[in-house]
Image 1 (spheres, helix red, strand yellow):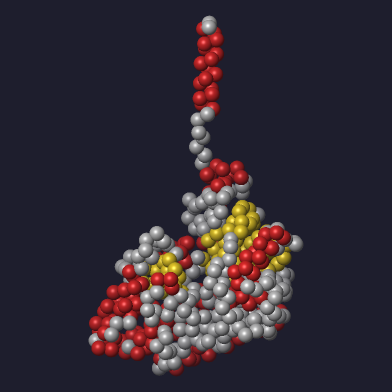
Image 2: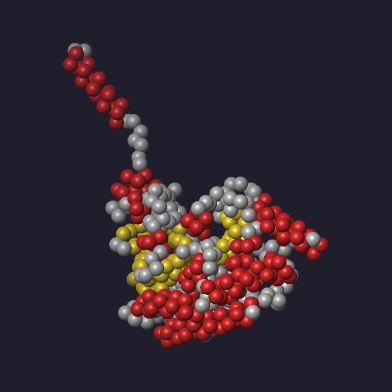
Length: 467
């Protein structure tokens, strides 16, 4: 073999060797290639959550979701299998409630499906979409209302579709969409969260969105939703500057510790529930009746009671029909760096009401004096019966009513939010059944006056309670 042939063979072997080397693929490069709309700011997990873009307070954003007829059928099949009710088969009573109430709609979560989502001309591919909720979902589902509560998870399907690995929505991984079930004003979810934060109680950020969904038969306007920040995604880190501590979404009245009633939202591989166990033990200790000072000391080692009393003052003043004291849900726990549990409010479409809405199964709201609370709700009952905590609670009610929950400030708040969404409810775009819960445009228009009347009534109730 001559030198030229040897040289040619060597070059060929070198080329083959280089060509066969495994290629290291940057997920971001794959994502950009697969989706030309992908930018670091809008789609990457390297981006800091952009609250200005995702949760604007002075405009209504637009979100579009598209599914095929087969995908919508898969949602219906999944829901029917898990909850035993076909879409639209339950019938409704005036106000949208299922006759006899929502009943036990089940505890299993609906399946995620991968769908395209569009916002501001940009596309997010293979986004996880699933329905969510209990009484709101039950009533809407069985009543055949397409304005369904849902959740988005932007990298739910990253294992199946590597091109969306670590996909985000301007820094947010998950977002919750509330359709204002049982709320003709369509603003209670947002306004209540605003009020909590104004009073110094951390709560999820919220913003209004026009939502269009194609269920496989053309794009439909599903009206105004409130987008709600997910507690364990960004809210805790944003408002507490730390998220290493346990985050729970409980379904407990705190009579005893039952592990299954404390759903862990982070640190899931660690079977450590000692923080909530210590709280429930301290709360129910016999020291409460034999040595109140010791009981308070031990309770406060496990639970941020001052924060809770501030929350309670706001919650009982505005009236909330769907939280602890009526239902053993709609709150989160976060164990702060000082090892004490902090209470985080959640789900406010049934707040700021004189009477319960369309949920059917909601029994009552907790009064300001809490004298009606039974032993079934030990945290409320024991606070109400303890003179030290009751005095602090009363002072919190007084401060809230006089500095935050004034008629002038609250009327301005509800007027501003009502005006912001009105063009997209009864104006240039109109909510209509079966893509809305509103029976008529007048329902929305009249709801503003109802809210103002409630605010005046509750402000007076707070003044009467604290004088």
